[in-house]
Image (cartoon, rainbow, N blue to C red; front, side, top):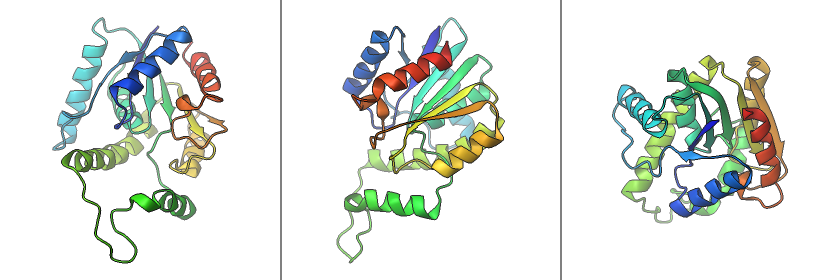
Length: 215
């Protein structure tokens, strides 16, 4: 069973090693597709898709059927890979960040990010963004819009896992998606953490859900 992992945009090497360790402890090998996203292209969809195809081949040199396991913004890239590749056996999306947020959901996101806003409410100086952060935001926005189109056309078995109290999930959108597409299943866990694999009380449940899905 070949498992490929698409990390969140901000996950560092230590976090990746912890994730691999957790999967290994649960009897699953995990192959990291991208250790970083610094070289992902911003210019065209064609170039982005070509880069994703090359990365899949590099991570899966024997061309095996693969399970894609994705986290947060990495879900966008996993979806785009599954859309273009016939070697995908299953897709697991952990805390995906694509979709249409309701007004209430957007209000909650604004509240949660209140101390990190770029534009302050009373005219205070704006927070300076690094070039790396700006690129991540551009990639995030571009891949989110592409993922919303691609997920509608993907028919491989797909499991979506998110935390019930995670403010950054478009829950109504995902629930509607699962109702319309019979290849999509949704499972939730009881935590506020954006990445439930980091929650000591819920990570084993998440692993059980994943193992059942990809077996």
